[in-house]
Image 1 (tube, rainbow, N blue to C red):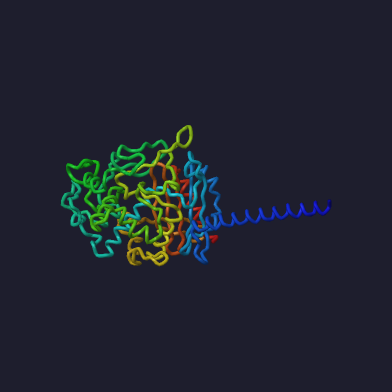
Image 2 (image 1 turned 30 degrees about the vertical axis):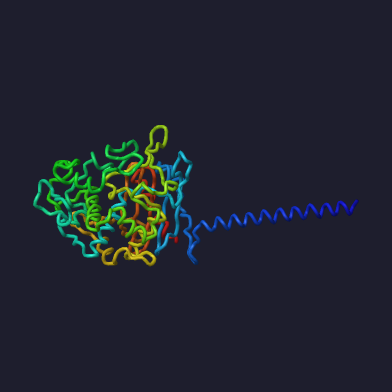
Amino acid sequence: MRRKILALGIFVAGCALALCLAIAHDYTKALTEQSQGMAEPEPGARQPATCKTDLASQLRRLDVPGLAVGIVKNGRVICTGVAGMANIEQKKPVTADTLFMIASISKVVTATALMQLQEEGKFKLDDDVNRYLPFRVSIPESPASPITFRQLLTHTSSIRDNSTYINCPLSCDYGSELGDYVTRGADSPISLADFTRGYLTPGGAYYDPDDNFDSDEPGTSSRYSNMGIVLAGYLVEVISGVPFDQYCKDHIFTPLGMNKTSWRLAGIDQSILAMPYDKDSSGFVPYGQFGEPDYPDGMLRTSVNELARFMIAYMQSGRFENKQILKAGTVQEMLKSQTSLDSRQGLAWSSRSISRPSNGWKVWGHDGSDNGAGAKMWFDPGRKVGVILVTNGMWDEDRASTLFTTLFRESDGY
């Protein structure tokens, strides 16, 4: 009897061992198959830490559904941080790869594309843009005065934003409705060429001599102009002979490895796209995705991880890894005061000071605001430190700036 029991025990143990080995084999196989579908980190690459600033409490303080941040130092992302939801209805949390609409930060990308063509000798900054356009643009009160490329990039062209056609021209608060020329759920069917011509030429579908232009002669006053940047984007299209969005993909996004970044909803990875939100008494309310015909001024969608590559290129004289998207001299020119009308204004970029316990930061960058979108990207070229902050809601600007300063101060600890 004991021999039978012993034999039975050995048999059961053997079966258990075989079962465990089979499970282990299947588990190892699954891990191998999974790893084959995942990008391997580069040998020796350091992965970003998690930023120390408490973003969960900042989420409540800023009153936004989702938040992502990144701190860059000495040519790499040293930390990222996330909080909240990219899509509340689908229960998708924010990650460092979530695509956010970055609103007016888009303008420095548009300027980069234009300055690449300037480097090639296609035009000079103080040329009259009418030498390159298929239609004539002039300020009604100063029809003989030229409008230059430099004026477009410094908000001194006297081209004004007409809020009938330019959605959320300066900033948006909760409760702001989408404009009449916003397309819900898709890109605008109005082409960049048709919109630009229609807005700037007499008899055009969107032309208004009073509301589309200032009375000042170009170059004599400073007034923030989304439409001036839209014209800059259209000039990229005309001079290069390539659609503006495709030009940016070929000459900026692909070289920098910004493979998910896009001006367009068509073809974008919807699985990682943040939903833009409004808010009412019931809570956060989705706007839904939307498109605008003036997209070069603010419709770029990207992530903290990918936008950091673009910012690092500017921090490293136009170079990221082994790709040079601008010459060092061009970057230096763009990050320099361009007009006595506003000493902070560079070519699309602007400067500001941020206080710190010792010496302060002199930073260059841009902010962004649109329906269901807020964004900040600023860096100190001398100290090689930069911060990116994005949301899919509409924050209080003062509180967002306080968080931004906190993140810059955190960078001292790395």
